[in-house]
Length: 206
Ligand code: ADP
Ligand code: MG
Ligand code: MG
Image (cartoon, rainbow, N blue to C red):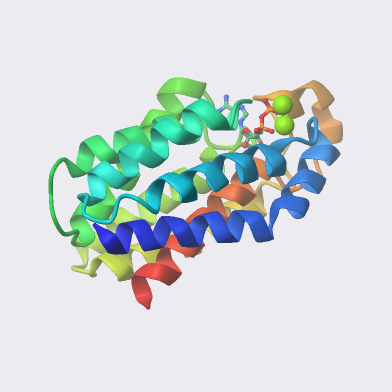
């Protein structure tokens, strides 16, 4: 429980540090609010988590999810919220997480985002970071990797997936209004997904 709290406090820190970068990315192909929306939401997440260190990992994820849903707004708030609600449900009331649990949580997250936003792989969204992350996590779990090993593989795959959005033409969300002009830019939601997973992996590995 408390290590899950620490991990999400770390995410909040990383989002704060990357707020301006995410604003800049969203200015290029969206409306420029992604970094500020997430910064505002994760500041509230950090406040609420400070009072939660006895909770199970699932309960922590549920708290993060409901906070993001009520504070972030835009497209990303409900999508990240759904991802984390699904992850929380997948973890149930487990007290500790192994690699398989982490992989199941990531699979549930990516399925939740797809069910909610209807984006497919290649549409230039957070799905392009999250789906490869979930797949890499599943492979790592099948090899018997620990929770931190599975998260590290997921973060690496998310990083590659996010980078690969640069060349794509957006077919979902605000960036899709630009058509072919959306190519040549990193998708902000894929980048924030990469940042979140990389931060979680760093916390799990430390
Ligand atoms: P808004 O476009 O409402 O301002 P944000 O700026 O917070 O929302 O988030 C934009 C990000 O949301 C995009 O970069 C993309 O990754 C993601 N996104 C948008 N629409 C979808 C969708 N239908 N499915 C998955 N992700 C989406
Ligand atoms: Mg935006
Ligand atoms: Mg907006």
